[in-house]
Length: 309
Image (cartoon, rainbow, N blue to C red; front, side, top):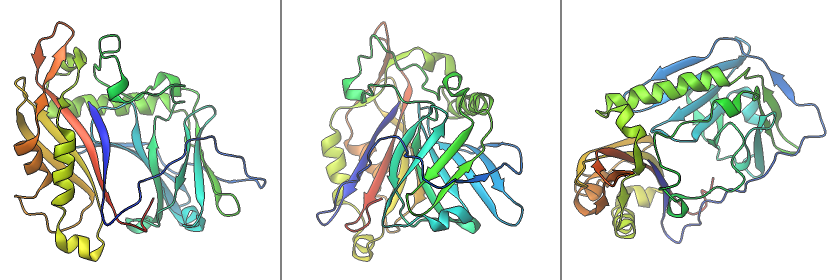
């Protein structure tokens, strides 16, 4: 399961806002960047990454897709010279085309290593369903969880990514056909699930994923235990968390992965410790009701007032 994303807000912090809508074509012709190398697929200990370079050897732009758990969506990022022109004060938009996923987003001024400025978001690559439902609204009996994955077949027509900010930056990455890269990406995730100690075929039979029945309590404690020094400094954090959940609802293992990490968590206040000690978990079940070992993943985002992505 890919759980909800929880945004923990401090000092009367504003919520994260993201509007969804198609990208308006700019009046000027966007800069077109072609690939300068093949797709690169990497399976780390806790995530799969698909990446490709664009532009020129002198001015490289990188496109990245990341997943930390099986999901119908992935996190994307683009970093490089063209991103420097995106203004932090305005909204931008992305469009996987033709006919793929599109959304508005706000540039945060973040950077990615030697590539410099980066824009990022979450995407299905293929067009999103007309009516998206959260886990709480989904009928698991008619739509079993199985092993979520990107819809590679529906992304067969997608061959580009358009980034646009009216009056500022506008460029296109010529991705090439996306079906084969996404199929390889999904296979990477299956191998990753196996490396966590799960049988992939058994996970395909999961109807209802693990469910934390007291999430409000857990989220409240995680909020209160944010390191005081990090809070004073205004340090933000962005984590991916995975729980390996036994067929009795126990937490067998908790893994916390940081994209950006605010220092100062001791183990008594660590998010994993809180999940392990406080979370009441209903285990995953098959259609026949039998409990089964499975995994629960979620993203934890800490944001301070004035730092809204």
